[in-house]
Image (cartoon, rainbow, N blue to C red; front, top):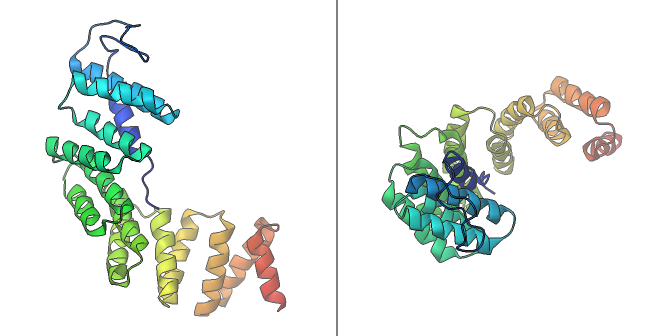
Length: 264
């Protein structure tokens, strides 16, 4: 549902790969296979990289081993707890993941990525108001650069809750996301869906036109734009959208649906 693009893992790996080779690199035992000089933090980041690589390969045992070693090297390193939170979330240890996220934030209250991902985690558990608080804390950090993605995460989180009292907030936060990045596909497509469901066809049409500019070669978007153009009475635009489907996507399911609609 969310944009959680495994951002946590990407960030942790990027921190780790920037480090030098650790004092001792282990593979499943206490026997060192590489030995070079480095600081404890560099060694911990190297362990994080190893742990997350193992986790991506489905080897949870080796992942946990290396992440634990990272904590031994640098027990107060936020990235170590950050990566452990991702590990616990991946293997389904929800309570431990929650505790690890809280530990990261206690160590680094200005870690926007941690706040964003903790918000996404809370949303997945159905804790929508707590998730909202984390997301909003993240965007308030002046140095935080992923504001668009976090506003999008917040809007999608509240939309996924399926509660009518959140609808205005969904539009507010997705619009905020688009203010930072007008090409966010999920924000645009969700706003199209939201306004169609609420019967505000004019707004849905405006957003689908924006979405079409971002995804010019998507027959599903073109067909949606055609339908909405017809509903608002924009016959000229509807004709253009129909022509694009027939010419560019003659075999798509959307074109077949259009053919059926036009012959009825």
